[in-house]
Image (cartoon, rainbow, N blue to C red; front, side, top):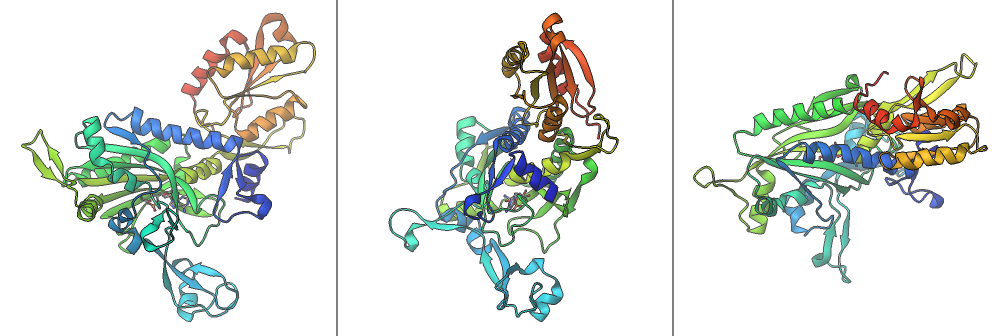
Length: 444
Ligand code: GAP
């Protein structure tokens, strides 16, 4: 993880938030390569959910919601972590994350000092809206994006003439006052989620739950993720969230071990039932194709962390490889083996020399490729070093422009994974890259 964190900073994927003030715990900034990667991951998910599913509509709901939302959802009452403090060193722990014997003996795992009793700590960030700081002005930062979908479900049925079963997809920020925020961007206080809520007829929920598990698994396979680094984990009774009848996590083998990447939950009619009760509005679905049968739909939720997916994709892509391309048999290259659809830069254009018109020629090629691809241009340093810089950024294709290019209009196309180089006419570049992306297979 240290290597990935350091590469992420060095190459401008992720920076510590407010670093010049010593950093802000639980918050991170996405640099030029990081925001591209995050946008591509979000784009892949969005395409999967909306473009490839006729029965799913998109939404972007506000982060600030009426505070009754969070009473109805159960978050005010139930969204808590058990917390203990050390009276001596003042460290704070999640009671469920320290060894049982420390908890029983009330002994700090760090300094051996005495621990306080366990208390419940609500994870929602609370603030006030408007000038008065009283109970009437309390407002929360949403701890999950899902509730924005539930309160809009009738609007979407009406505006889009949706019929059950159907889904609503949303990507957006969520906030949790996490007590433990280690492991880089794995668990943070400010993060992004990609959530899809699928509304189904009660009684068909288990079938749809299994179907969405299958689809989410296939999605990661399509992204080119190492499938032996993914596994299912079913929630035991003690792990189930207050709204869930059944839940499975897709776990990924991160450098610190197996951890949750995404959850698939059967939320039953809990959320819509509660919103109906708290708002006084009828949340029933009227099945016009079935004698106007009325019911509160069950909800199957797929909930993935976007920022956690960024970490997963970084870990999954990270590779160090012994290469001998510079004459040293022990030379190691660091390479991010991103799927070309996720790579922040798809193609880098590199003139062999700055002089003799090669730079101008290379810039012209870049300008043409820009229309179709995210490009980079680099003219400084030895060509081998420039390739390595692109390998580290995960750029799948490099185009090198040399003296022969001036004569016959051909260029070198270099492939990141195999380091193979081929010579092709520059006019064929865009089409060849497209073909390579379509047929991309991970080799390592
Ligand atoms: N709407 C259901 C829900 O929010 P969750 O299991 O609490 O369920 C879903 O969160 C996903 O959101 C997780 O699998 C994880 O990827 C991401 N996530 C949750 N808390 C996070 C945090 N503090 N930092 C980063 N990602 C988080």
